[in-house]
Image (cartoon, rainbow, N blue to C red; front, side, top):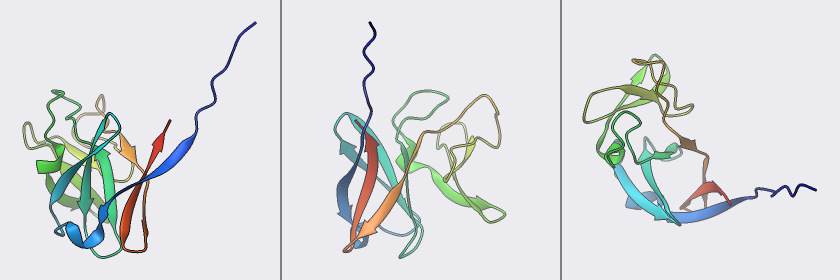
Length: 116
């Protein structure tokens, strides 16, 4: 007999959209997860793991926000690996990936989807 645990997703409120400066990151502690929040404009907010996939250091909220074509990116502040903010794909090292989280804005508040 095997038991399967069903995973559920919940939306966790983090902060107001106006609490974030466009183009800069901040860290939210959601349960045990350290999540870097990055606001690009009024309607575009991304959430990624705060830990650098290459080193494990908690630094991604201090990364360099940019773009590759029309894809928003963040570069690690340590070794400058560049990640797609939407997918977590690493443009500079295919062996690395950055965990991403879905976000939404509800009543001016940023919510991040977490699996439980």
